[in-house]
Length: 540
Figure 1: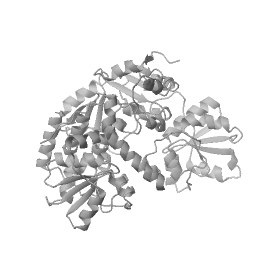
Figure 2: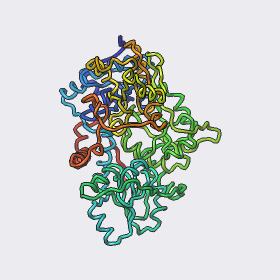
Figure 3: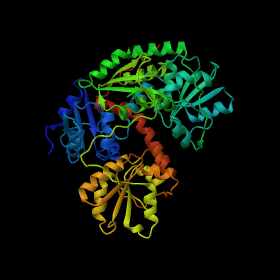
Figure 4: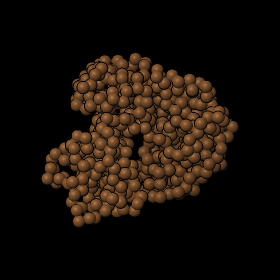
C-alpha cells in the first residue's frame, strides 16, 4: 500500500507551483491523453513508460514530485513504483485534471507547450522579421540572392524539407552560417516544420549580429504544403562544419550574460553534482549526435541545443532545477543557454571548460531504467520467434507490440498485435479464446520496455510470457519480414500524441491549419495560466 503520499487540492498545487522552490509535475496518463489537455508546466511520463522516463525528468529522489492523472486512478500506482525506487517526496493532485478544471484552472492541449508558447512570445515581443511562402517563391523568381536554412535535426530534414533548403540545426546556426552565406548581402531564410524553430533560428542569427538580412519563414514546411507546393524528400545538403569564431563567441557570451546565464568552472559544476541530494542538476552536452557519440564528458546527457529549447519539458521535468550546458567550443552552449534562461523555468549555467583529466565516454547516451519488483524477464531471440511462427505449431505463440502505435503502423512483426502496456491485460481478458497460446511474446522498439512488461505479466498471470531480445529493431536488423497497418491494434489506446504530420490527404491539411492556429494562439493563452515566467531580454 502506498504510504507518505500527500494529496494536494488544485488550489494548493497552484500555490506550490508559484512558491519559488523546486517542483516536478509529472502527468502519468498516456501521451495521447496528455496531449488532449494537461497542466501547462507538467511533463509527460505515462505509467506505461514510467520506468524509462522518470529518471531523465526527475533524477533527484528527494525532489518534490506531484503525480497527475485524470481522476485519481493512475497516480497511486505510479507512486508505488516510484517509492520502491527510492522517491520519497511524493504528492498527487487530488481528483486529477478533472478537479483542476472544476477549480477554474486551464488545461493546454498539444505537446511542448511552454517552448511553443515561448517562440510565439519571441516573435511578438522582439518583432522577428517574417516572410511567407509566396513571397519566398517570388524572391526565387526574381533571382534574389538568398539561402533557405532548415533548422531541424538531420532526421527531420531528411524526411521532408523546402526544396533547396540546407540543413543546419538551430544551435549550429551562429557557428555555421558563414559557410553557406559568406556574402553579407545574401538573405537568410530560416524554416522548420511549423513555426517555433523558424522563429528561434532567425532570432538567434539576429542576436548573433551576423551582417546578413534574416527572415523567419512563416508556418515553415506546413505553410509550404498548404500553399499547394510539394516538399523535397531525402535531401542531403548540410551546412559545413566551422570552428567557433572569436567575434561570434564574444557576441554569444554577451547575449548569454545579458540573459542571466552564469558561466562557471569545473569545480563549481562538481559542487553542484555533490549537492544533488538537495538541488536537482541536469548536465547536457548540446552538440550534434555525431560529436556527442564520438566523445563526451562521462555522465553528461545529450540534448542538441535547438531541441532543448524547442522541447525543454521533454528533457527537464523538474522546475527551477540547475541546468548546466557544455560545448567544448562554448558557442552552442552559450546560444542555447540564453534561450533556456529566458524561458524562465530553470537556473541555467554554461561550463567554461572541462579539465584535460575529466573522464570521457563514447557512444550514445545511456538510458537509465527505473528498478522494478517484477523479477527478471525471460527472453526469446528474433530467430527463434521467427522459427516458432513458421513451424507447424505457429498457433502456439502470439506476439504483442507495446511500443509506439505510430511505429507499429509503419512496420511491425507479421501477425503481431498492438496494445499499449496498460491495454495488454484488457486485450487478453476480452479475447480469452484468441490468446490461449502456449507462449506470449512481447516486443517493443529495442526490447527494454518489453522486458519490463514481460516480467510484470509473467508474475501476474503465471503464463509463459517472454520478451523479444533487442525488440523490433533487432528483428528488422536481422532482415526478418515486417508488415504495415493497424488491423490488429487495440482500439482507443491514446499511447502517442499524433502530430499533424501523422495524417494524410485532406486530414493532414486540416491538421496543419489547426496546428498553426494553435501555435499562434499560445502567446495569449498562457496568460490564462500565469505560471510561465518568460523573461525576454532585448539585445542591441
